[in-house]
Structures are given as structure tokens and as C-alpha cells.
Length: 193
Image (tube, rainbow, N blue to C red; front, side, top):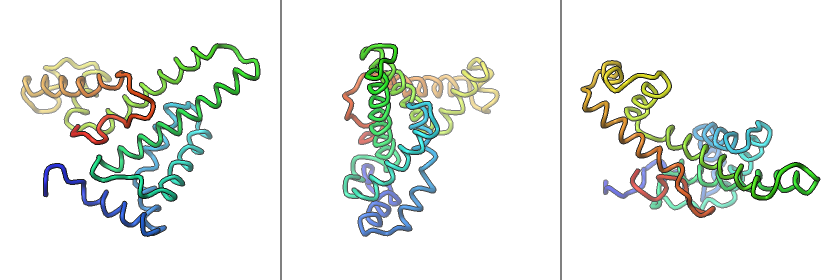
């Protein structure tokens, strides 16, 4: 298979959705609903709102299966981008309504809150999407406070390999704070991350 060819499952899923196969939507939901919900929750910090966004995202997929282009990246990344768009739009609506009802804060405060939530959601997505060896190294180093030597010993790799994994993981994670236009896809969509 060519290096830039989309994964087979993604292509087949897109074709099945385009044909209107309800079972395909169910399979997609079973596989990726937890990702969609967790990203929405990270932005909204509200289970009920995350549930609504999850339903909206999968309804959008069902109604617009042709929007997904397997050549631009994995379906998982496309769904993450949709989720981010829907969650940020809901957060903006909620915050705008609160401001209109005489709530505390300003439009600038609202935009700052949206930016922080977006960065946090992108960071979560990057960590969950990175290769397992990189994620394991970061988890040991940052959540369990291991240095690179202890990380290497825990993972059964050389110290150089542990440093390489930590460096690559941090490089990926550093992209979460990059400012992108609101319509930009999440990291990895349409690129070779």
C-alpha cells in the first residue's frame, strides 16, 4: 500500500456511511464515541453538554458522510475536528448567553476560556493519539515523576531511546498550544503525525 494511502477501515467506513448503512454508524459510534465525548467534555466541562455534542457530531456524520475525505487523514482525526468545532460553538453560545443575561466577565474572558479549553482538548487528543511507546514514556516521566533513566529501566529500553521518546512526545504535545484558525483541523488530520 502507498505511504499516503488512507487506512482501509476508514475508506470502507466512509463508503458504508455514504450508502446509508445504519450498522456502519453503530460501528463507528462503538469505536469512537468515547473519544468524541471525552474531547467535548474537555472543552465544555459538562457531561450533559458533552452528550449533546456527541449526538450532534454523529448526526452530522450520518447526514454528511461525503464530507470525510480519507486522503486527508484518519476518520478519528476528522471526528476530533468536528467535535472540537461543535464543542467550541456550544461553549461560545453558552458563554454569550451568560454574558447577555448579566453574567460576570467580558467577551475577552469568554474567548480566553474558549482558547484554554481548545488547547486542553488538543493536548488530550495528541496524547491519546500518539504512538504507545511515546505515550508510555511521557506518562512515566510526568505523571509518575520518573527521570529518563528510571523511565528507560521501567520500559526496558536504553537511556538514549527513553530520551528520544520523551523528546518526540514533547514535540508532539507542544503543537497543542499553536494558534490556528477556528476551522483548522486538529493535529494529525491531513498530515503524517
